[in-house]
Amino acid sequence: MFLQPLLDRNLEFISSAVQLHQKGEIDANTYVFDLETVTSNAKLLSEKGQSLGVDVIAMTKQAGRNPDFCRAVKAGGISGSVAVDYECGVYSHAAGLKISHIGHLVQIPKSQISRAFDLEPALWTVFSLEQARDIARIAADHNEIVNISLRVWDEDCTFYKGHEGGFHSSEVLDVAKQLSNLKNLRLAGVTSFPALLFDKESKQLKVTKNAELIRKMAENLEDFLGYKLIRNMPGTTSVEGIEMLAKAGATQVEPGHGLTGTTPLSAVVETIEKPAIAYVTEVMHHHQGRAFVLGGGLYMDPVLGDIPTKAAVFTDSGGFEILEADMPNPGAIDYYAALSPNKNGTLPPIGSTVIFGFRPQVFVSRGMTVGIENSSTKPKALHHYGSSGAKTLVRDGSK
Image 1 (cartoon, helix red, strand yellow):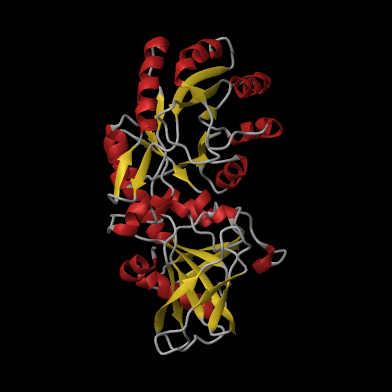
Image 2 (cartoon, one colour; image 1 turned 180 degrees about the horizontal axis):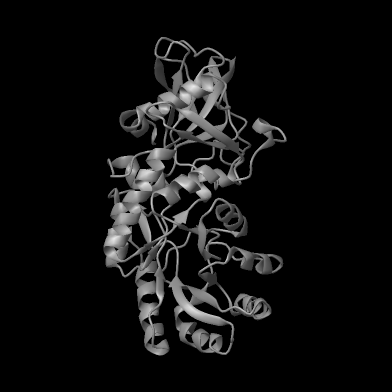
């Protein structure tokens, strides 16, 4: 879905990735980032947030928490991140980003709560009073006051399957009263997800009922508490999305794919954010009239549904052609994808560089990640990292 935007708007980056792969400096099965463009996108998002009085913090899971990616985001003016889970917090924190929000979307298991304090999260979302009490007990041991955010919902809210949970709107005030009895907690925010979605029919962004509920619950709680709360509204966040969320009452947003120009909106219109991520692999073998390319990172975020996939195949001569790709079933291990022959019935040679431009979620894949510096001048591939954000032994051995 993002292959053509990459070729149209950031061909120098793609050419750099191909060159580095063919020189053996980037392995197949690797997501690559145009670090300068990531920084530029982060600057656009940060400045838009500042102009509207909205705090902008970065989601890094979709980029595999790559440390060089995180540093590029920070260089663009976004110093805080949201930890989608404890591991995300660890790797983003190690890369130099502050942990501005933890516990949403994924709650922190009991055994990790104490260690999560080492990350110094600014805001901690809870789905239950039980988790709030667990955090309060450990906060007392640390002699700290923890800022708590409530995950809220009602019957009009939208949730992805498996994301459900939180406090029903009818119980939020009672929960606030109970939290006031926990000395080491301070109720500081309200959140839900998603607050903004891309509508496939109209091809436009739409504010959800979740966002309306966040605003309503925050107003009710502010009347009760006597102070302002953080209104955290995550979901499909781009420069255009920040404007919509600010109008809906958001005070904090969490761009992820906006940092790499791969929001659903960017797939259908030319947004201000430029595409800055691609998947690099190579042709491994031919079988029954198709070219099979190495997988491992072929997980495609299904936000736009089941759409045809294409890949750009580059040869040593420097030219490229776009071929149809038969992607592995999402329920199967993605060892390979298969490319169809070109219009002349010819298959690309074994060893050819293959570039995909889809919307990834690197942290759920087996792909590696690499940041590319100076893609328009003297491109340089930085370290290979695993999909978790840890340095991989596959490329660098024990160094």
